[in-house]
Length: 100
Image (cartoon, rainbow, N blue to C red; front, side, top):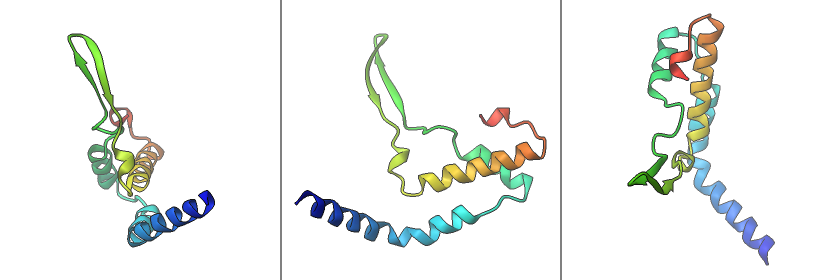
């Protein structure tokens, strides 16, 4: 019974993600060739999830809000795009320390 449940859940997830596959593929295959574009991407794509927070009250950590970026179905593609932009700039010999 559980294997049937997992198979149907997997099929549902695949069906829901199917419309995004062309966008994911395009983002995965996008190559960075312009240093201005690479700088722009590194500035606007954050290095860490901006939604992750520690809630502190009177100096004590009350709760932790986990990163929500993983819920974005394009998260891996956006992170990969930023990584390729950083790699492009590093290969050109530019200082990328301000983006790390």
